[in-house]
Length: 191
Length: 66
Image 1 (cartoon, rainbow over the protein chains, first blue to last red):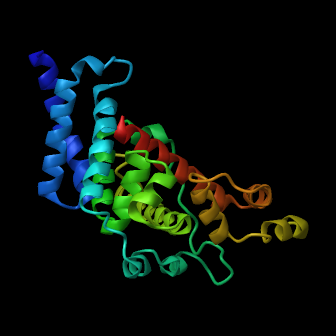
Image 2 (image 1 turned 90 degrees about the vertical axis):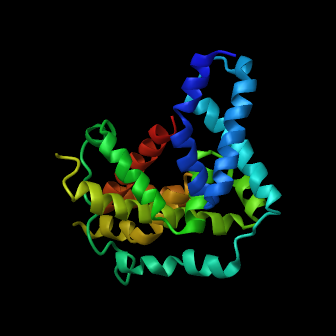
């Protein structure tokens, strides 16, 4: 076993933990899943071709481990009541006028690179992800970070495609608001 | 604004456009949806700004995971 490779894997532990915790909302379980992922990566070192980054490769393994963990928890379907609480489109009524026009002009976020090359931006992004309601975060991470297909997510969580769209819309609107408040209008992008 | 353009913009509300732009990341829009969204974006700078915000968030998440 190549000790350098082990160290390289170890450096990604923090990122894997953040993703697993966001997704599973259970620190102990997240630790198990990340441990499994790193162990699988170590023993499957030959399968790492170097075509993608170590991080991307590990995220691919983590994805399977998380899906397994969700299955072992006998599929916790997202309860209809949670959908009502978290998935209510009416919450966004404040953003729009009666006829559906924007209440306030969405801000110009300027040159994306200006923000995306700053580590502080990603720290704020992490905080905003952590602030999403639990089920909204689970679904968003499955879709956008672990890149599971819509069909897979609906199947694992036993929700309809329409539920999924509503939850993802919600997640994006919340993230947008959080980034707007804490980065773009807070002047972080101009500092 | 010229009333013709305004009428076209009103075929679909900003609220609907925001929802359709989000859904477009999960499923292809129907031809009619795409047409209405395109028309709306042509006359609505607010929704164009929102569309750019969505694109920035998409790119941010892409970099977050890679």
